[in-house]
Length: 307
Image 1 (tube, rainbow, N blue to C red):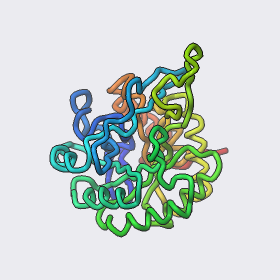
Image 2: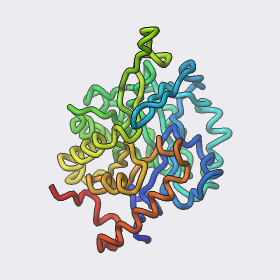
Image 3: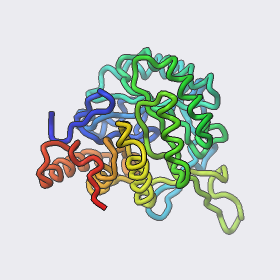
Image 4: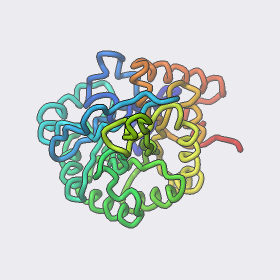
């Protein structure tokens, strides 16, 4: 085990750095830019039952300290993913996390059940919090409904570890986390993009093709750290529930903040658009940091924030 090796519910990660859903292709596309053996996991695009073209262009905007997007869960659909992309999961030198999205319980069950049959996908992440579709926030505003969804999915996911990706709610996020775990989730991904608006002042219309969009990047990082710490301190630490902390991480110090706040692993997304090699730089920085802290492993620093 290396200094920065970590563990997600029994799944060994060589590094706590995880490439986040929707930012690194389906399975192996990032191998053209970096050695995937040097990251802990790659998360697939969120897969829906039927193919989705996503929202009409324009779908991405630069924003102060980040990026606004309204991609709309564009993906090839379950059947084509299983036929073309799933076989690649066994050949990449890292873990693959399968991201699942849907507009109904039945859709989540169908996809999660198929993913659970793929041995090379040891972790399934339910995306219940996409802000830029009309059906992408299934159950994420209702703890009881979320618990019911997880209980149903847990019935078909018998091999894989089950994570759920929650929205950046400043009120009620701990309740959602508790409900997800009560329903059967093994871990939490905190959080998805922040729901925002951007208006063209000349046309008086949305600058993208829908009024509700997701904002990601460095601008949301302080909020993400706070939410990870809140869930860790009020629930996850005592419950032994691991957190993948995502939100604006672009360098090792921001990743270290997530670790200190309570994250076992750290998701990177928007940073990949700026520098595809940034996950490697982050992993290297974390290794130096753990050594400088006098720790034998990064696990000693999870949740070690001293207020």
